[in-house]
View 1: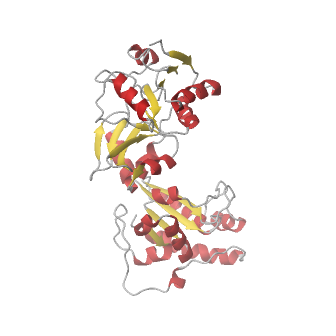
View 2: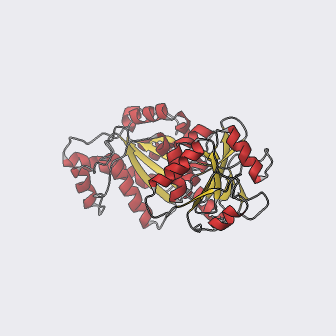
View 3: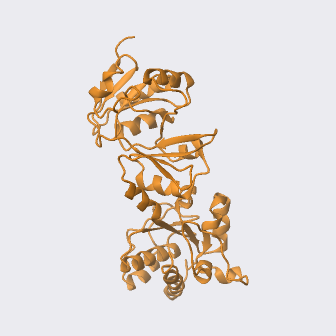
Length: 371
């Protein structure tokens, strides 16, 4: 076999032609050495059996030991894995892109190891191929993982089609591997991310407030909960808001800004965002303003049913609540849904905005004591 073709790419520069060249090799069934922030790897189309057979051969690796898969967007997670837990979303949100490999239940049975690398060259190669890439470390099995280009090419020169020299890796240590197919989860490889960081991320909570346009009610709730948590000295809770029909990138309404400013809260930097499957999947608790919001979120993602509440329902009925193991609970007699709705103040007077904020403020104060 002829020697491997080598291209040198500056990670800080735009070298689209070379990236496209590498991507074309992979989409044609070839193998390419690429840098990541951890170690150098050998990338192949994860859906190309011939490429995978060649990868197993040059790695001298048994075929009952699957390769980790590199991806560049969250959509690929849903394509490749099933029964994705809330804990999985927590870890992916916290550490991706970055040196974390998560083991999830594969769509076709067994397990699949997924990672979204932080290295720009690796990400651009994946994006250009529009594929999920099998990418073990660029060394023979049982040999140390290479942290620079010379080490990566040492044993594989002539065995792969193309090699990208992207300079030394940033971290020089392999990714941490967490198995999320078992309960409790298992840290399979203790590496780039410390165990305590994994545990802290799991224990963190994410609250998502939802209204219609993400310009008033959910903004009020988000801002006030942030204020309460800050006063409590807490940094273990993330707070976000979104709207079912939001126009992306708009600001909070003028009345909302005025009402919150009177309470010492500045939301001038707020930008609206639309509710997505990803946003609700990542939330420990989803708190909505009206029954219609609850219904539409369930249409979008039925699996979040036990984490989805009307804000007033949650504030009125919850006493002792375990965020991680959230379950719908009731305080007995059914409350009229209309009484649980928080009215939309859009188009109303400033006084009406004040009334709506007072209702939200009361509910948020109550839930802040139990989250």
